[in-house]
Amino acid sequence: MRNTSLCYLENRSNYLMLHRVKKEIDENKDKWIGIGGKFEEGESPEDCAVREIMEETGMEFIPEELRYRAVVTFVSDEWGTEYMHLFTAAVDQLRLSQLRGKENEEGTLEWVPVSDVESLPIWEGDKIFLRLLAEDAPFFSLKLEYQGDRLVKHSLYLKEN
Image (cartoon, rainbow, N blue to C red; front, side, top):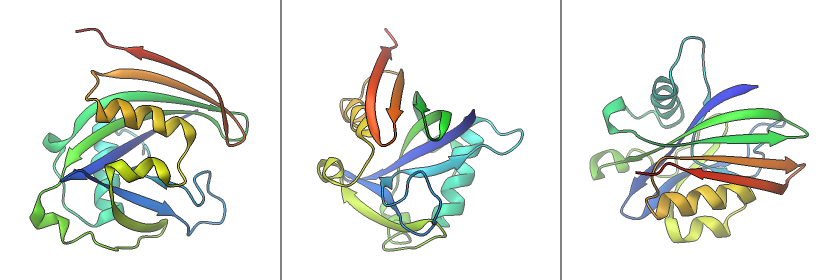
């Protein structure tokens, strides 16, 4: 079981997406995802998100800009169980210019209109939490169960205000 953080950086109705095409052995191979990765020893979800943003984009980032949105539990017959801590954060115009077409060791970063993200090759379960983000849902917990690449079950728990 592992813990990860994932952040969708936003600017003017666009998300910064990473097209995962570089690693040969990668559970996200050829998929488009947000910015994130695995916790390192002693990290909080926020620490991990900030570090991954800086590593994958080269952009300086401060934790106060993060909005903690959800915990997503992935259960996979191939990859095991993962607890993903989901964040969003706005990116200003000044930092936006630093990120166009940038590559890192996992793939290529591209700004994608939020309305186009679901048409990309993404995990089926990602469509569920991306819709909840778009609806500005309160903090939620989502469990996604996969057999191979196929979503077979999901359970959503919304926090009541």
